[in-house]
Image (cartoon, rainbow, N blue to C red; front, side, top):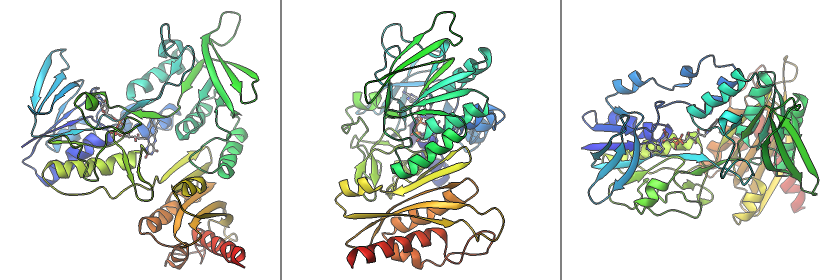
Length: 467
Ligand SMILES: Cc1cc2nc3c(=O)[nH]c(=O)nc-3n(C[C@H](O)[C@H](O)[C@H](O)COP(=O)(O)OP(=O)(O)OC[C@H]3O[C@@H](n4cnc5c(N)ncnc54)[C@H](O)[C@@H]3O)c2cc1C
């Protein structure tokens, strides 16, 4: 049995590890386009900031660790074509030669690539790139290019186009390095993964830390400046009301999301959804004989929404594990995502799970969303912090549909959102969450855990509305 995984990031490596764990005699080969298998790209902002001292520290496992599990790594090797009936993968190997690798089962884990928004100077002939100080951020090579710009040009200013979670993490990282940072976002508020009420709090933290935030502003053009401009790049943008905005910077980072990287799968006639993600069933089967797929290149089965696209490292790990098991003949199913995510923005943290209010409405629920606040631990014990919570529940059934949290980085926001994620996973009501037997000691919590106080605030509001 020869299993071949394409892709050496979260999905491909998880599949390979699971297969080797279940069947130590399985012959497993992982084909990786670059030389950085199993690197935590989620950690890139913390290497850029200097908090992680060396890029090698971002490796979840070293090449030696991976090889010690018994998998074979084909690094700097790019998969070019899948011969589905012949069960062969054509690759261009590190030496530049083309080769055919036979497989019994194939797992596609080609992931995603950064979206290139329609900004003049970013795409097309004469486009500016890393050597000019214009960057995207997804791979270790992208990271090295960013570091070259920062170190070799002593960059003092940056424009970040995009204020999603990666954009916010990078604003934090570049401020930590002493740059002046402008963040440009076309939506009305930063961090669109949470409701605008919490996005406003994220923006306040950015502003408090010195980031200039321009929302409702769309970048139109990136160009080089000429002397005597102190900075080498110029970003021209337009506000929603049509006003022209211009900023000069030494570096421009374009972080406006990702799209599935599925050219290889499409050429093999895998079925794709409208976004170009590979359609898989919950067992991660593509419908092509002996071909599975996982991670950012596939559609996401969501426990409340059905099929969507929600690329996250957590999901890629789980899907990869399922694909690895099923490649061996297993019948594991991916249990579904809730889009649970968390981001640190300087000293604050935003997190969400399940559905935001508008998503719940669009999905056909009758949601009520209630915002409230609670202390992370008893206020009489030093260093307590207020947590802002938004609980979304279905009016008719009381079912918990979503939760969003915002609070200090020491307020255990991530683990608190996981309480709600667990509750939603098990289709609990808001009231059920309030009934959970959770821990308490004054330095760490309250007799009613904060998220339970959020649940009770929701319940009070529903009572009030029904009166
Ligand atoms: C800066 C940043 C921060 C992030 N932070 C978080 C976070 O905090 N939490 C979270 O859950 N997620 C986070 N993510 C998202 C997360 O990293 C991705 O969801 C995850 O990496 C997806 O894994 P993947 O294996 O599907 O794909 P990718 O990571 O995109 O990897 C694709 C792999 O396929 C290889 N490949 C592609 N084409 C070929 C080919 N033709 N031949 C051979 N190999 C090929 C690539 O070299 C790579 O190894 C972050 C992403 C970024 C960029």
